[in-house]
Figure 1 (cartoon, one colour):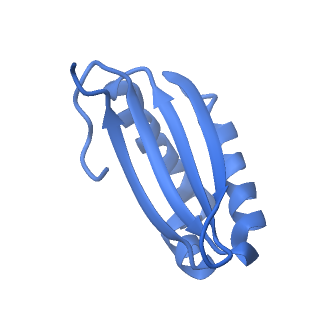
Figure 2: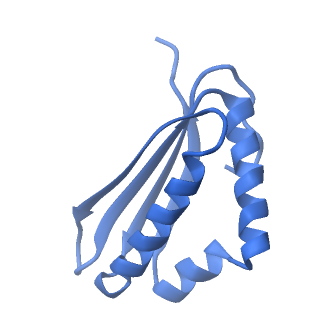
Length: 112
């Protein structure tokens, strides 16, 4: 999500990827490392890294990270961007290099 989220409900960051077989090991290693780092941030609630066989030898991967509220999500997003800059890591470049399709967004629970 390009803009900051504004709400007091939990925020669910849900990222969906189509990962070629040749890229799966590197992608999974990077995803697990990112999740370990995120777990230490204030407002972290829980996370999941899920996979399912897809078409054409690709694996469908879904990552979910739940944040206590919008303030925690926005702070985590800023911290992660800073962390990546300090490491010289460009996630967009990695996705492109590995041939991974991505759909990433933040969600909140809809009122019933």
